[in-house]
Structures are given as C-alpha cells and as structure tokens.
Amino acid sequence: MTLLLGTNLGDKNSNLEIARSLITSEIGEIIKFSNILENDAEGFTTSNSFLNQKIEVSTEFSPIEMLNIVKKIEYSMGRIYEKPKEGELYIDRIIDIDILRYNNIYFFSDILTIPHNQIYTRDFIKDLSFI
Image (cartoon, rainbow, N blue to C red; front, side, top):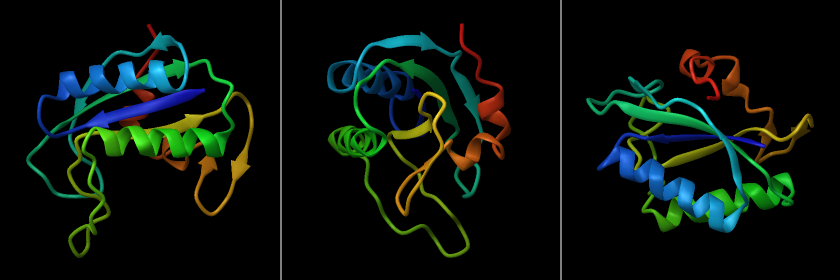
C-alpha cells in the first residue's frame, strides 16, 4: 500500500519522522521510502511550503481500517479539521496522510477512493520516486 505524507506547519522534517514512526507501530512495516520534496501548496493560499513523501507499507488492514487508522494518527499529531476559507479547498496542516494506492485494487465509497484521484492531478506526486 502506498501512502502520501504531507506537512506544512512546525518542524516539518520532524512531523514526517513522527508520522513514519506511528505508521510503523500502528499499521505495519515501511518497506520503501521516496525522496522528500518541498513544494508550494495546491488548492489554497499560504506562505508555508509543504514537505511531501511517499512510503510503501506492508499491512493486513482493509482499506477502510487503514483510513480510520491514518485519521487517528493525524489527530494524535495535532491535525485540526476546519472549514477552508471561502474559495479555497484546504488549510495548513501539521500532517496529512493520504492512501494513494492499496495493492492493485480499485475501491470507491463515499469516504474513500483508491487509487486516490490526486495521483493523476498533482505533479508533485509524480516527482516523488522510491529510492
């Protein structure tokens, strides 16, 4: 399964490190890491750049169980879900964890789509390659 980690608040390198540690303890072994990319925000206005990284994780959890666990990790790290400003899609965040792919399955529900639709629309995701 492939996860995308993103952060644009606080000590961003530390945020990624903490997220990877929590993912290892809560979800499973990280078997691949991508490069870490610094990029501007997409979908909202902010002066805070993002650090993003993809990781490949081995897990036995189902896609919905995974969604619940990554939301729990985000919350435990201090992620706050607020309504974006008018005309914007997102807000600054200490951590964002997206499920990009889950093996070779296609999964569609009201709360989760796999593969994640932004894999095809966000250039920075394409610039993250596994080492």
